[in-house]
Length: 309
Image (cartoon, rainbow, N blue to C red):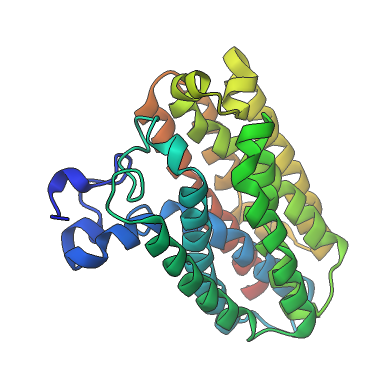
């Protein structure tokens, strides 16, 4: 199928690297893995970085593992792509009814379901190779996350809380980094995981606001629909909850004043999202959703700075 500019997925940046530089035959696959929209793999990666940073603060003599950080980044890219591919296979008959998603590779006819399944297997094998580099406890923990990955795409059909299940799956890295360093789990990692789940419910509600009208017509459920006119206020409450639980995690790991000085940008970025959010304007919602990349970077850097200095 010829590659025209119109083949670009609707919510990808106009000047993304896939559409500008990737060879034409593989562009649909890179789009299906959402490599033209990197925000997803960053949001999957940051909880891994949080967890490694928290572990380094709790046990500074062990140090911060940049090797594990690199492995988690590769794993995040691969498994985010695998999750999106699985989601697109399952949702192919829904995506063609939603304005924002009908340009995706499967509903637009650029990739067949059989081709998508082969691509899914390849990405899962890359994720498996990454997982095999860790200790046995972390391997088992990583494998157990597959249950959440598989059930998540179906949740929008049966519950108004698919964002909760996304949070459970997307933030598994908040446990993985700690497990990689300690070989077990302790309560700071659990607080970190819980806080990150609330963060995800918040930012994915903002993302889902773009599709409320289409979702209502085709019967897809989301917290954006559930919260209705109170989406801004309830999202704010989830963000506040995330900050509280993140503080429990950081305090449990033994952070000091330096962390507080470094982390002040995290609540400010979240407050900016809420204060400027316009739920009925799709572009406004998309920009604020993507701003969570900087929230993740700010928290990860704050933990690293606390450990390093």
